[in-house]
Image (cartoon, rainbow, N blue to C red; front, side, top):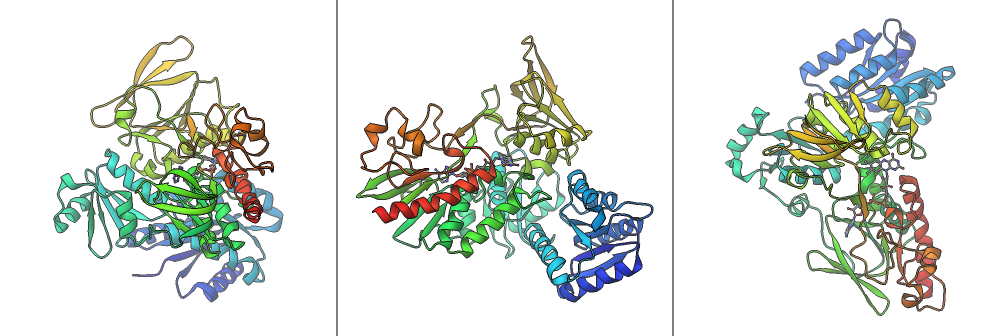
Length: 553
Ligand SMILES: Cc1cc2nc3c(=O)[nH]c(=O)nc-3n(C[C@H](O)[C@H](O)[C@H](O)COP(=O)(O)OP(=O)(O)OC[C@H]3O[C@@H](n4cnc5c(N)ncnc54)[C@H](O)[C@@H]3O)c2cc1C
């Protein structure tokens, strides 16, 4: 198979030649470097590459070109190659314009001219972007292939597991993709056994549980040690940060998740406010980087493993797993975050996974190309979901009970939504019911003003409201507030049951719960800020507190 392509576009022949030369000097082993001297020529090249079945890894384009601006070219290239990384080449004096272009055209990066020396100013950026591209890209004939029905909750569960664990796969809808039937026939798989997951070596798992998929992919689900210094339950941003610091500071650290790494942040299509990523970063990219970093620094990671309970045995914490096994640790971090609660409207439960999705915009969006979808909720997560779905669906409606988005959504997202033609905001409206035979076909909406109800057609509903903390697995002595969020440090000392549960001569450490040596960080904690950065901050600081606790025992 031919090598993936790096396309460089500049109307200045000298600059074009220099960038091509630099890129070739470093990347010619793995990539073909192709040049174009205008936006039009580049678009023709891109379409030719597509028709020949080539892969395009990156487009680096100058901004100021006659006929077509770099940003226009990069925006159009996304329609043909959605995964290709897109970089704008600008003069130093144009950096403001480049930052604006990043916001408006959702580019991956900008490079300023001149980029000498390339070892410092060109290659690190290109390396990073190519790494990200490699992680998402899957050649057509390679990798995992999942065949199933679009409206099957079982198919959705496997897709969700693969996407959540940053495992690339090809989805083949049995009703829409002719290759799906051929694949089933060749492997002797019956339609009744779907979803079916095909591996590169020709083997197949029929209607698998996530755990079977993990085992088949060679993931260990058994802890390596008898006793850990710190076990972290929940691999969202808080847990991942704690694993990075725990590993780097020499603690025997184990990170567990019932699903995969990333938590809520892992489902985000674009996190724009996390420090150090001026062009934003997708949740899956941030997760992949963080997990690699934690493992490189010595933390162990196991998923899917659900923790169902904790008991205390002479200061040691014994974690009960859903599969009946046990893990023992000296200190424990609850970083289990929050999850969406089931929406109470009629018909929602019956259609879960069959057109009703909680979050999941990233996993399911491509299946709704040309269709009409509803987003329920007006927070930042709903805004990001709407922007991502708008790339595929014909029409995206955001349904909110309030009169607008100002109080619940960041301005940058409101601005993006305003500029997106196929997103419509439905204020003072709520979801009353979901209708359809085997899948969502219609919704019942209700006016908050006068209580009147009406039916509308819809192909899917993505729910982004109603969160609750994942704290049910913790013992009662881990005190919680009235909504179930875990109390720590000073909040714990102010709580009604404090004197009943806390019997130490010392005060609880910050982030320590009602049981000595059990800490909480991130969204599961009462008073959390519900941001990626604050969860990362708490997860990082908890490791120093764990050291303090271990020194006391
Ligand atoms: C779609 C979306 C977009 C967002 N965008 C932004 C943004 O742009 N900027 C921003 O700052 N914030 C954003 N947020 C908020 C941010 O993602 C959260 O504040 C952050 O993820 C909280 O991190 P956490 O580690 O505390 O918990 P979570 O991310 O909730 O992770 C908790 C983890 O614990 C696991 N778990 C739970 N119970 C168990 C158990 N019993 N056993 C094992 N594992 C368990 C869960 O599977 C999960 O992986 C967004 C949230 C969503 C949903």
